[in-house]
Image (cartoon, rainbow, N blue to C red; front, side, top):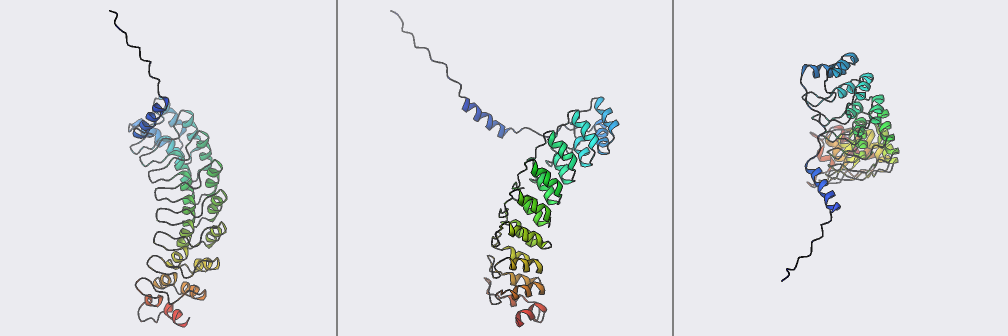
Length: 330
């Protein structure tokens, strides 16, 4: 009797899509380290110190002796980072020619590019970008090169990074954009550059604050307020506590900022979630100039908050102070 043979199974086709998914999953679970190998040897330390003071001869000598160009100190700082941080173009060029990795990170997530941006090293930034520096790299606090440059008002750096394609709406861990950081510190030129490159003036951070709210809270550069409103920033957007830019400006006692916002069309009677108005804030911080500006533009002195208190109820002492007199005299 002839035994029947089973039909042979066809070999399974390799599922390329499944392999790709598996690779992606592994990449998420096992991210590549961008930190350099630690080298606390005297030679490694000498090379990094030499890079920091632009001692090209010593740097070259250490490299020729076999010191790893990408080795770092205990904090992850490499010779390249030290050279960049101190503005040493020649040493930086030599280190790059000897294989220095532009995208290595310190323990805090800083790269050579973030050091260059923070210290306003325009020429070095151009060199690092040419060698493949990642503009999207973030420190542990979520700072990119653009965010750092905007925070410190380094307009030439901001211009360069935007020209190279940096995302104007990238955010840090608190959700703050470069525009918010520039507005919060009164950097008008940076604000204008970011707006001209499409930065969103109404984007909100984790606290619900916009660039306009940050500018109002800062209060010392009213031209920033005007630039943002000209770019169609929403005057009535609120932070998570329900406060508009006007309420924030009043709470800081920024009379001129309050006048500008009112002139631009801000609602003089807007109230936060507790019912606090700009006028109440101005009285609480004892700013007669701010109180007067609000009253002159029709702020309602009879508005009440959730505790049924009016602006006059926040006047100190026996209500004979300047703010109380403005409220009483109208």
